[in-house]
Length: 167
Image (cartoon, one colour):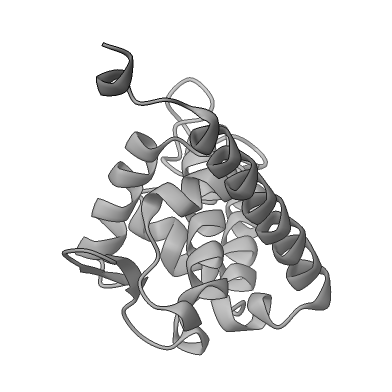
């Protein structure tokens, strides 16, 4: 199955956003830290997600992103489609030129499977994922790690002496 990092990261970022939506807008820096996705890559993804009306941005201090509608109205297939990703298991990327420019013997089989996968992902909402216990457990672990890491970094900063005091 061809689902690249772009599609996987977009779904992961949207799920992270949905999990943290109750606290207000979520920054890309927080998503980046929790999910291990670079901020520049998230910026590219969120530009496409915003253009497809899946997220909205909030500017200013405390700004970030939020879902543009309820999580039960956003589906995994929409996220994948928004970032120009295709769920496709054909060799020809659905073009029908798999064998010397012609349709191969099993093209229709793999095209049907691709359609089934897309339909399956069209039935899974972001809210449905948020409500899954195993996903909540992973999110809680990530939040705890982020919180501990933040405390440790603040402790390090407290031990640092500003350069202005050294010079």
